Length: 181
Length: 222
Image (cartoon, rainbow over all chains, first blue to last red; front, side, top):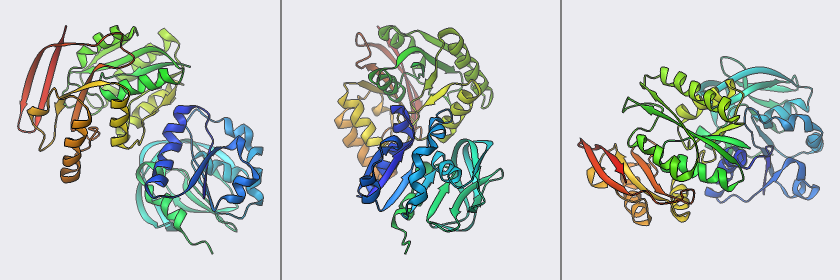
C-alpha cells in the first residue's frame, strides 16, 4: 500500500495537489491510502510499502510550523518521495534550510544522473516560493535557479521541488515500481 | 473564505463556482475579462458578454474589464481587475476553472502571489471525462458556443453537453485526440442553467460565424 500524505488543509488544495496523485495511482490500480499529516498512525506507517508526501499551494505553509509531526521519518526505513512542500520537510528534518526562490510555470531542469528514469533535460511544472538545501542530500537535478531533485546520502528518501503530477506523471510510477533492495 | 471567481461563463469556471459554494465559501464576486482578441491566449471569448445575465441569475456582483487581448498586456489587465476585486470585496482568494493549461494557471498563480491572494484550482488535472460527467450529474445545462478543431464543424454549435455528447466526443477523442472537455481550446461552452442559477437562461437569437473547423456562436438571451 502507498501512503499518500496530505500537508494542506483546504479541500480545494486537496483537489489541486493530492487528488491528481490519487488519480495516477487509481489509473494504475495501485492500492493507496491518503491521510493528513496530523492523523498518521503507527499502523499506517507499518502497512505502507512506499510513502509520498504531496505538495501544497504557495500561501499554505502551516505544515512548516508542525515539523515535529514528521519526526517519524527519522526512524522509518521505507522509501519516501517528497513533492515540493514534501521535499522541504525531508530537507528540514536533516539539518536543511529553506531559501527564498520563486519559480512558477514550466521550466527546464537538468538531471545529472538517473532519477527514476529521468536523465538529461526535462520540462517540469513549478509552483514554489522556497527550496531546501541540506548537506545530507545529494542534488541530482537543477534548474537555472536552484536544486530540483535530491536524494538522501544514506537512505531511500527523495525529493522533487517541481510537481510531477502535472507533466511528469511517470516519475511517480517509477518511484512506486522501483526496486530499492 | 471570501473568494472571487475568475469567470468565463463556460462550464469549467461555473463548475468551480458551484464547488466553491458547495464547500462553504462565500462567492463575493465574479471576475471577467472580455478580450477583443478572438485568439486570446488567456481568455475564453465566444458569448462572454452574456456573463452579465449569468451573474444576475446568480445574484453575484460582476467585475468586468475589456482587454485588447495582447499577450502580456492582457495579464496586466487581469492583475488590475483582480486587485480591484480584492479592494472592493476584501476577498481572500481567487478560484479558477483551470484544468490543464499551465500557461493560464501559472499566470494567475503569479498574479495572486503578487497580490497576496490564495489561488485555488479545484479542477486542476482532473480527468476530462470525470469532469464532464460530474457537470452533467450536477444538473448543468451547458451548450457549445465554439468549435476550433478538425473534424468538429458548425453542426456542433448549440449542442447540449449531455451523455450523448460524451458518446460522440468520445469517438473523436480516440480517433483525433480531441479533448472531451475542450482543454486544448477545441470547444468553448456556455452555461444556461445550474444549481447556482435562480432561473434558466433562454437563448433568443444566435449568430453563427466561421468556416471549415473553426466556428463561433454568439447568443442573445431573453
